[in-house]
Image (cartoon, rainbow, N blue to C red; front, top):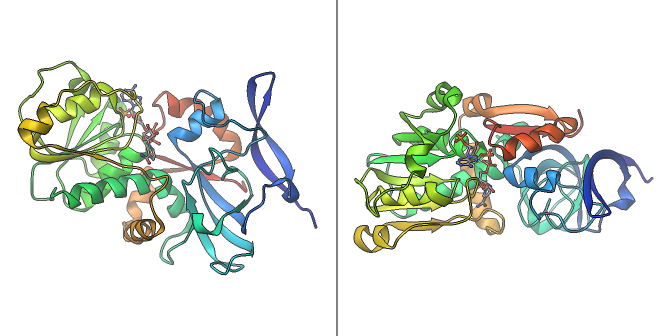
Length: 329
Ligand code: NDP
């Protein structure tokens, strides 16, 4: 039977993109190996760009955005999954080139899926979502390059956002002294509750400075880019490492080579979209060990309709923590 499912759909008429909630037939969905009944998706910065049409994220219409989801396998043409398996999907161009998670249903490639660890609830998995995966990848990259909890402070930029909140909480739980960089005074208590030991106004990092400034950071997770990342690099201590994962403040990097050639600073690129299956499994295993109190502190659950306004808000840097989308609400 060709069942109807609810989805947030992007259409393009005369070059103008519109988003609306529609009913689609399962036969409308592109081909794939695994049919998934979606339980939850989440809102990420890239989803904000896709829904509003402000970034050139989506190029073919009609289109279902949503770069991550968790759900239950309904039908599988792949030996990797069977009906009833709980699965997570993040990245691989889903929600950008391939129909994504803002729907009650998806049809995807088996290799894009990761089994949901038993100890993670579907809501918690999407609270972590792409943002948490990116935060964990960033922490692992720093640790691989020698950053340790007993060393100098680690700064997180864009700290009140999705990736930033998860990074602050995860670092604090691992015993790091975390400094949260934020432009919002109203999130200071929230950031301290996640474990930040100090807070720095984002203007301090983003303001112009000398090519090198006093050494402060043993490590950094930067979700902002631009002059903020340049500011972080200038005050990263000798041998320190900076994980660059975002561009919420700009895609340029107005820096000099001095942090690299005089202080041996490592600039580590983080990509969650195409990270290999084995790495994802390791990351989701770590995610499953995170204390559930982080979920309670960072998460808000909303229905699909809320995405119309929240997609604008996330681009203005006004969303705090993680938004989980209940596609069946
Ligand atoms: P959010 O909007 O939730 O967080 C971004 C935060 O950055 C905001 O909350 C705000 O924090 C700060 N910010 C926003 N605008 C500016 C600005 N103009 N100047 C300085 N700071 C600003 O987004 P996400 O956490 O979902 O994503 C963060 C970034 O990470 C995005 O650029 C996203 O594309 C990228 N990303 C990359 C991934 C990867 O694989 N590399 C995966 C996921 C995300 P505050 O108010 O505290 O200052």
